[in-house]
Image (cartoon, rainbow, N blue to C red):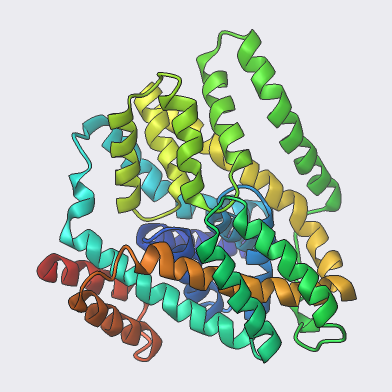
Length: 394
């Protein structure tokens, strides 16, 4: 009875924390990782810096929305499969609900030009900068790791491809394998408890592959519209590498080019997705709702996130064993340094270049950064100040 009560308490706490993040995490995938770092690592201390970096590295390897996968993984570590589901619901559904409502009332995407939206973008700048500083202190402590991070920054900025991040991580892993032998940068105490059996993990990986190949066949030979809808979003969610923005051309191909949704409606929804907190994959909720009301929005959301959920459940139980091996540990040093570089590069573009456009932007970002880094204000307070400041100053 006490165990059930403890699990219920964990789930309630996880739901409230993830929902708070779902309501306040503006700025895209990299910014989300900054918000997660502040809440889960610095404030709650549910995981340490090393484990957090390991999760980011793992999720960069997997297709799907990396920030959402990190959130799901933290939920699984905290409270098992139910924890992963609760974490996903809390972080995702605030924006899903807003976008389904928006699909019924939209006229155009002028909302993203509002001053308070610009204020929220500046909040994202301060949050990401704060997270990068914290992670870089832990993960790039010497010249070798700093060099790997610099390599990662250069390649990420100069090679803008959906394959750039995974290529950088693979190369950095190889560098770590040979450069960081007998290193002491990996803390042996970072072993984490995963409340998912390896048998269930293998089932999830098998189901991921089965659905990937079975759904197109079912869609072709059945007359059920919801199966076709599920198939389109599932395939998209299972093919996205390189962050949430990469989902745009895939969805455009599935729905605009095939005449299911016109371009104006598509772009208006994407603009609205930029203006709400939470993962960019919730754009699927808008498209599904345009096609088939709130039911379509719900189906689309479940379908596009299901591959990410199955892959996280399928890989986490093997992660401790893999990263515990010396060679894997050495490679992880290089991979984690590369993650820092990728975050810095993404901080520059698109976050900095699309947000810090004039002196007042820089001044406001500096104030917000000081609030969260030195004055230790809670992230939700910084978000609120960003909204008010954006409304009055921009």
